Length: 464
Ligand SMILES: Cc1cc2nc3c(=O)[nH]c(=O)nc-3n(C[C@H](O)[C@H](O)[C@H](O)COP(=O)(O)OP(=O)(O)OC[C@H]3O[C@@H](n4cnc5c(N)ncnc54)[C@H](O)[C@@H]3O)c2cc1C
Ligand SMILES: NC(=O)c1ccc[n+]([C@@H]2O[C@H](COP(=O)([O-])OP(=O)(O)OC[C@H]3O[C@@H](n4cnc5c(N)ncnc54)[C@H](O)[C@@H]3O)[C@@H](O)[C@H]2O)c1
Image (cartoon, rainbow, N blue to C red; front, side):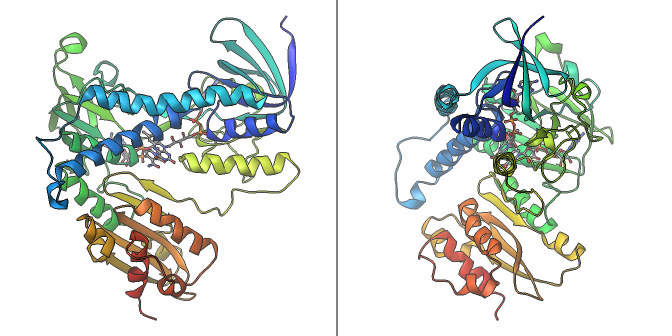
């Protein structure tokens, strides 16, 4: 019989919310244990945001080098990607962050262990340690932060077709001559953009009739235009039903994707980018009295409480918006409650940026959503080409759009497609948080020439 170790806080899965909470509470003197299966620092730094944005940085550097002459700079020879250097760059960024976490965890005072946790009773887990052995831990409070994992699309033949997902593509075995990207969501658009810039002939197959289906059609069309201009072939409204690898696993011929209309598309590789599935299957969740939603996420209320007393869930697995910053905010919401305060996830404003090149930065309601919710809206639009900073950079692709409540003049949301828009977005976010009418942003004195200055121009288009 293994002895049960009691702790104040037990964190299962070291994602953004869980690791932040564990370190914070350990530093505050709580007895904290955190169990992580295989990724020190979680999904974001190992296999998601950080490696992908490192590679997006490479794609942008290549694009800059290709258009150096227009900026008056001569480079000797054609700039190109070195697979070895690319891997080294990505791995040095990821490795540096993982190493920093490996130091920070024990330094905080927590009991950090590598292993797989599984519930065996109320607030109690058994941990199969990666280096052998078992521990049993019980938390006064338990936090589930086990994240999501790439969903396997239900296509005939998928198991034997040897396709990539968002994690395996990051091994950077090769830059293929041709690649099908299945799925036109965030992952699909970002990888399609970067691999097209790296020189791959990309065919993006999207089941819905636009990329990024949450966005207004005109905004999605803007992103589609960016991808097309980079050479991506878009197959919209094209649902896949089967996939096979010619020559079998050993022969490794082309991958062939069959669409619902029976037509076939072939390429050297296929990236499945069809969403993410919650990691709850092997947690023994029913033993803990924790209920799941129909889709397998942990069911939580607006306070991140599960159906079991003193068991909480945070991040992707709790159905929070699938962004690292949302998970980080979950941490703040939960910390407040665990330390005697009140906090909720209800009504929070969660921005996001899709890192195509250029990027799409979004916050608040789309025009479609605003109209569906009964708002009478004013819509402002600005071509990025009108922004002086964009002209100085010869980087004028994109359009900005803002949706304003006609009754109050408050900004309901924006969609900014263009250079540096993810940075500009935060200025809009602050205006929205402060409840400012658009005129105050329009009339603010903003530094010239910055991309943010475009906000003056954007809201100028609405007049008074
Ligand atoms: C390709 C890609 C790019 C992305 N880019 C961005 C971006 O640019 N910006 C952004 O905001 N978001 C981005 N995201 C989304 C972001 O990565 C996730 O929303 C975020 O990582 C979720 O974090 P989390 O806190 O839910 O947990 P995670 O970071 O997923 O952590 C969960 C951890 O739990 C561990 N675990 C699971 N089960 C167990 C168990 N039984 N025992 C012990 N440990 C366990 C896992 O190993 C994992 O480390 C991207 C996602 C992908 C796939
Ligand atoms: N920059 C960022 O913040 C960032 C980047 C990457 C991922 N993420 C997060 O990761 C999550 C997952 O991203 P994702 O792109 O994998 O999922 P997603 O749900 O955004 O997109 C998946 C797309 O695949 C399509 N699809 C599914 N099955 C198909 C089929 N059989 N044939 C054709 N098309 C099919 C769907 O229509 C959908 O649009 C996102 O929700 C996002 O929150 C964020």
